[in-house]
Length: 192
Length: 342
Image 1: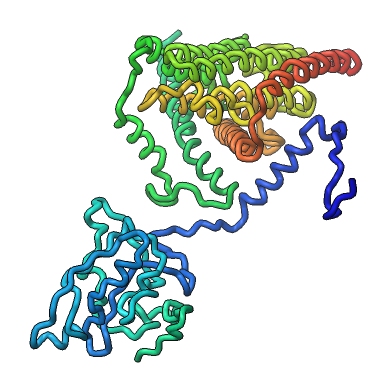
Image 2: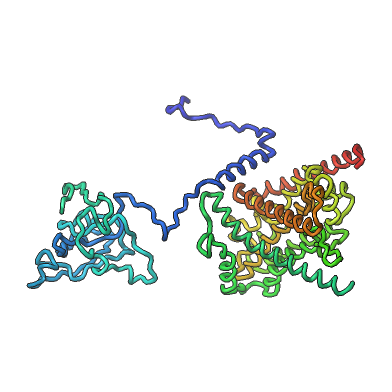
């Protein structure tokens, strides 16, 4: 039968030649290859000391953003928790009192906001769901190892950024990252 | 048999024991390091600078671990297995000549613990005892995988010992002696025996891979199908002894190969320099260890290059190829001796 792809080959059970049967030339050839690798540059990255560069679109540890006045952007609407496929996010809402305008941007805020990093799958849907541009996934940090499972539940103390960074310069001024880019209609976020 | 003789020998035994165990310990480190290099990695580098404290860390870990003797195992034999392995691995070093001789205070001190006139036979006897360690361990574990591993070890070692012995016979025909010391001395001012016995050396090399259970002949501890082979049930330092014995065996076979085929402590053309005897002896010993280390490297190099044989291939290679080949080698050697009247 004619082959449609033209790539099929007849299987041949050819006899091994004497050179192939004594096996030693093949061994020597293999040993030459391994010897070359012995002196090649090593690809190992010594992790804790040297960190590999992340891709710009990498989805790492979450951050809860503040606005340019240093007030938290999150309004505890719960859309991130709702959209989270791993159900890693929980929050408790609270009402802003008088005199807290500098701390929270709108009248409602998250009194408790927790992400269980063992559940989280770092899909970034929370970031896409957020209408206030409050939660982002950084492209420069991973969840560090820990001895205790409880320590993997990150509260606001670990999630809220210490001071306002313009988006695109999250945590320590990395390069402009693709976390600003929302393919589903929001367009490029341009915050100061 | 005077007192100084005893002291000389005791010191020598202690030094050789320490060196061979030290080399065996550091072989584990270099094995992992070189495995890394061959695979474009850097290997262990956390314990101390470049990871050189790794063997100590491994040793401490093995000693600290819980010792488990399985409920169905025979406790006496279970402990005897690794002990015997370790014992036989260390015994062979006694007859190897580590250097010519030192002259201290007008006394000649040969750098060999015992120049037995049947040194080669002694080595063979002790090496073939080594398989009892694996067999007893595998049998005493009362575990099917261990038993299969032990059976493999036994049949493999018996098969390859024949070819190994036959390849040595050709060498003995040329040297006319069974004493390793004399064989090394013969190579001092003549060709190394690898030049006169290339085929014999090749057979010996392949067989020593099989005798030490190294890849491509590591079927007794073939983890893919036998879990861990004869040491499946072992933990703690008893497992450590098995692994350590393997490296000691590797060191010993490297030493035997360098002594029999690569001139032992002989350095080519060193007699032309007319150096002091002590200096010559020390250089010779260093040269001997250089050769040994090269062979250990070779063992590792092969291990990280070649995949393991299938069991029927292993048996076929041993019985149908190496044994006839070594018999042919004996015949050729006979003709060579007859024609050139060596």
